[in-house]
Length: 199
Image (cartoon, rainbow, N blue to C red; front, side, top):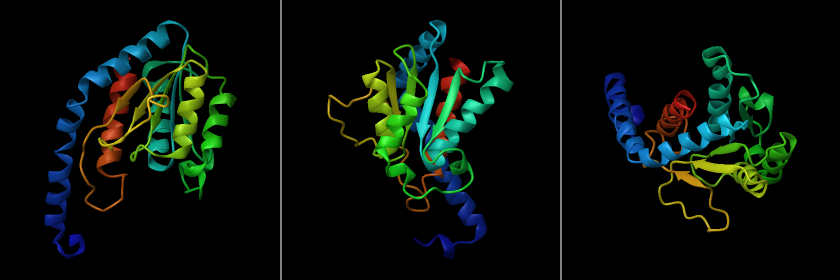
């Protein structure tokens, strides 16, 4: 609450001290991340694809990671794909209400003809984003493997809706309340780096 009253040097120290908590929080979820990498690797070996589905910063990070695979690994662009709530313009501009549209998430999975060979990773800092859940539930219905990446270790999911893997590092509250592009965003980037690079 007193961020604006600190000196710039103190602000930097505060942000870095919070960011230092991220690696340990991610390592606490290492076994689940390992399982996710095994699922994705199996999908790649059997003709499947990896989809990221997210809204806002989470969606942008998914699109970013997907778009970097062809130049880095010479993969075909369809192998790893990012789906963002609100479509392409949401990459640079907020699209009001897009994250709350579960039906749009469902339709995005239908549009991409997701099958049982594919893996869908939903990215939602709170773990509750309707667009992401729409995508995950439709993917699961189609037999795809589903993974939820969130930063809410207290998230409770009904058994029938539960994704195959739930990765939920406890990164703690953000320096700027509610600004999940900070620690949650940094942790998302680190985990997506691992999912694609190691797969």
